[in-house]
Length: 498
Picture 1: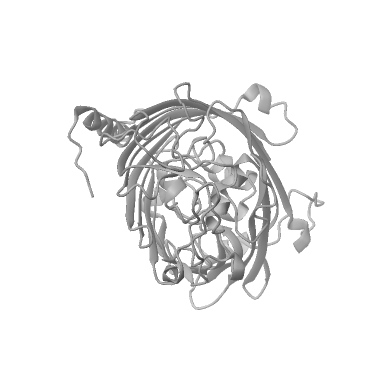
Picture 2: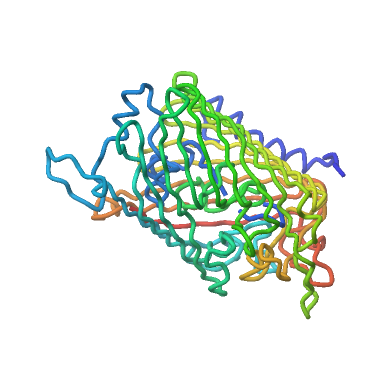
């Protein structure tokens, strides 16, 4: 049931969230459903802790941060020529062999979220930054990769292998791929294992295909630390878009500026057989427009569709917690995810993005949707200001869920009873401001990689009078409405990557 915003405080918060977009015009400074897991396409170059492609490669996801689309076929051919990777030093004048293009990357992130008013020890409605007032080693991500490189006749081949260790891995499992092997705050997860192929077929600029385990391609905030502008996520990136998929994804380059995206996969954070949720196919359909308006505008519209519920029987634990299995009806109950994002580069220093997301889940009988505006301003080469404003609606309270134990999300995806608590139907508002600081006095002395610090301040608020924050639920009453109607908290992370 939708509820209108009638009180003055709600109106003020909406107004503040909209200011981010307005301030961009004046040039003033201003990232799953209960049955799905967290994910991601990156925000143009909002996450300017490094340049976008450097941020992605430094975090171990080179294919997600590849160079801008070539403007001619000759440039595309040049881009696929063998190049020396960072694991090899090739003599000048020598054309590297294919295997001399290997790249290795490592990224290490640690952080803390301060919330002195919490009575639950949690920051409600967060995945990676859920632990309040606790210093955590969020992620160590390591990758071995090879960019797509020509193998003759217009064909190209590359690959990415990547894994994560840290507290973030609790919320980034792929069922059947090492899930549940560790059970504490610090776990591990394979995050990417895909073959990348360029095919000179059908279209003048060909088709790019990825096969294997991949990051999701929707949303605005990525899993690697430097693939998002803040330490904390927005609601949509945590609760609507898929974090991981296993399958096939094809990007067809229809024109110089337009791509058609099709994919078939096993679903959000699941694989196949006993590790699947219902073994029915899911997949992507979308369009992307790149470098419009003299290279200033990028737009995409992408959907992900398919049954996401677990078709196992419902299991109840001795303590009373229930699993997510709903029986055979899960095979036909659909989940629809949609994401529309536009990123506009105002000038060399300022960028604004608007991201709209929507989810409908037949099994939860819930709709969730939201709009997030981002603004970034490069004050100095070593300092970037970021702002984010979001309004997000959960119509029944079934989507925004706090997975309260170390293994709750993995258990939910695996049809095991899991501890959790949620809220009443709520319209959430969120405003975050922070900076990305790359200290020159440190980075100039580093022989490898770069160091980034990101302090931020964030206010979350219920805009319709519910009280979901700073209080935990119980197995007898997992729906919280005896907390506070807002959550003011302060976070900071530090990342070293090469």
